Length: 213
Image 1 (cartoon, rainbow, N blue to C red):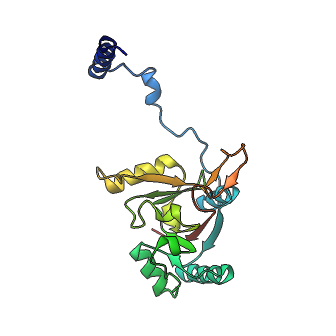
Image 2: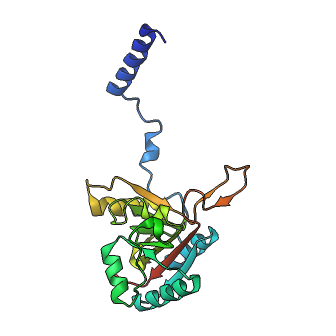
């Protein structure tokens, strides 16, 4: 590319930035309401249906005591030796309720990781997580199995509602990473055949615990 051509391109970009093009059909931006139909079932039911359809494993717990009971049974059934958890409040709550299995100090040595989440998205069966959580960016991705502990007051219908709630909670200090996890990792890059667990956990569990605001 010649110097003159490059200068012309940069000049056009600069002009475009100083004189932005008006948004087409501005009246459409004023329309309110979601493009999706409102939920007809309870959010707990809708999330469970969508999450399990995507190969997620779902369990509802009426209390933290029941949560610990189910986690202990899962730990024994799978013959796990160590779980990894970096969220101190979650770890303390589980241990105080009688769960003592989290012994891994390195995520590479664990059988599964345990995290919380910011919100659960009922419409898509997704878990919304962020770097503001103590688990950070890696815990839910690098472990072979991811266990998410969430509460009913973290359920929202759609992604928009979750993002608006995050904005309200964090204000101008939004987390540097916000991500959606929707069931186990999957890809169809290899000969167009769906393969699970290539770029992330092979299994994802969600334990939803009853809690009122």
